[in-house]
Image (cartoon, rainbow, N blue to C red; front, side):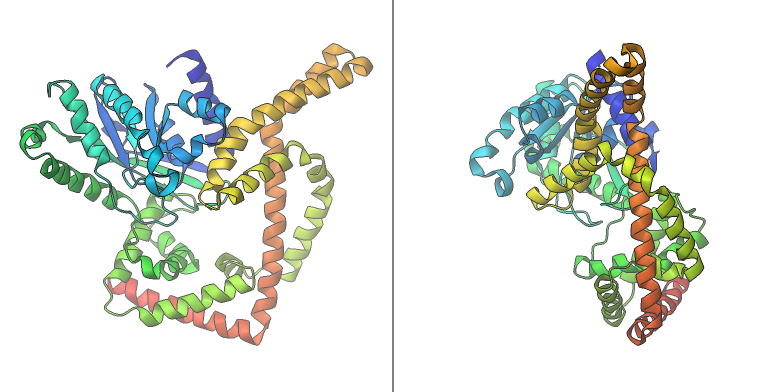
Length: 449
């Protein structure tokens, strides 16, 4: 890990843990084999670049190499060099980059195999693409072939290990959410070397089965994809929150909340017939979407006085919010623009963290430092001018956080106002009654488990 890499990693850690996420968790870090052991970390892919950055920040004693989808490297030469500096390598897929581009994977896999043979750590996502839901997709066998090919490079003298891992997010698209990285138990490939020499595909299948079972057991894997929206509503609703609290999960305790959610999903999966429950849940979901509110706004039941006081507070803070427009607006707007260009909502976090927090913020900081420093030097003197400029730039993270918080408070106030109106309407009362009936049925299901 050279000085430039450590500088990048330190800045990413500051932006990730100090700004982007509300809380980060890592479980099973002691399961990561010691430095110098050839390790291939295989993980589910629940986001885009953010997944790789999560693993980057939980392994501190070595430079980790990642194989990620090639599309994130197509933002330009500067982005390509920057991502490679972080240890990322592109994987090309036929259904995204085209058949001709797939041939480029040879160089990536050879580099990764050599890195493993040399005792380095490589992270790969066997689903070959991120998911937009809490579900474990199909695995390709490329990662097992890579691991065995690395062993072959050593003449099968080194024990290559595959370490199953998972990542989990409290929410995919919001800012100031929580991230959990979890490491499982390393799987040694040495017992499979002889089998691989005569039946390579069989050895790969057996190892893949073990890896997949571990990852599935660690993550929230909602296998009933057809009814995902209804199940996800139930687990994230007021009922899901209260169930988690009853099982000892604090508000920001993501590991405990994950275990509660897994139990809830398992209880639903054990039911013989949930069609009516899911049908009713989708009615509630559709109504909430139409009224542009969320379940939490209904459950809060904010009073008119509460909303009036919040409105006054936001009004008093509006001059400060106006003063914080720079650099907040370009930092927030650019990721949204780029995400819409891709057409993939999962890139929202990638662009917000990977582009704005790590890349754009530095450029804006340098531009602001020079602009304010030179602009005020003639009137205030160089010493004072450059001190003000430096202080302003150092406050960028705090400025951005305040601007986001003010906008978030405004959004929630308007949602609470709409929710209050919903509770008074006849249609709203009917839907809320159905919502309570769903929660009552869920209570019986969970208690029976």
